[in-house]
Length: 393
Image (cartoon, rainbow, N blue to C red; front, top):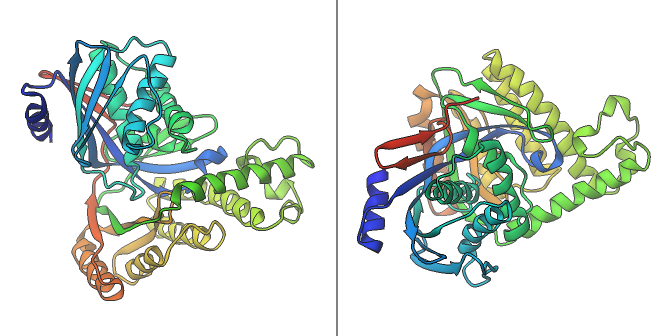
């Protein structure tokens, strides 16, 4: 992929780039809509990347060409402003804004962005863009970043500049993943550790190819509803700061305090956090059947309580669960369309792919995109012959 990045940069700028930054997308195995509620998640970084090929610009401005959109955007580094006409560029500008706010002296930059992380599919292309942009800027500035701090800065860019109130999971995974492992992350304390994935299994992602226009507004609404639940519960239990603090065994009658749909939203988050803890233990013990059972329960909760599924997602999950060798399947990402993730025996992947394609085509009139993915390490940067990669904590 670095050859492609060099070619695209040379096509645009007539020279080789000084740096190329690569940031992986991610798939969340379980723990959906828990991250912004201070809860637990269990994602993996996968072998789909956003790359940024870049060189210094002698002028104090940034110019980016997005291969996937065939569009260019430029902005002065001392005059960053939200661009309603080029939404993709706001992820770039947001990163530059937050890095400058943090005191980094950024050089002018000319860059090309590309990659193969599906856009809007629940594999976190936005976080991968933010991470790759940040690493490219900092490499040209001669700065080796603190990855944990950088993840928080990229999240801030998306929250405060772009206006998407995401949690920390996506940026954290893209920067701090370890090859062959999932990350168990406590999104409140930011404590994390790696959980090895057993040999002989595959992670299959099926993209519905459906994108919901209301996804962003509905996502922000779900977050607001969770915050409303916390505000109500605090009137009786002041120790509740996030829904992760809700302990049903210590808080009898907590659900009855909440009106619908706030009660259903909160119930999903509380039960999903418990599922993540049980799923982590199952994965550590190699108990894939229990892990898969929890994936299916997670999907049911997302469909019925959090109401972020869709007919296409439900159909893919049901179809996957009818195939031999499948342990579990669920929607991954924010929902409202996007992708499912299925944990399956390697030997059963060809049959699963065929069944998903054929059944979905017959039902909806077009085929899903199927990805057989591998868990990879975190983002890295190429500077000449040198590779700056994350070695793992």
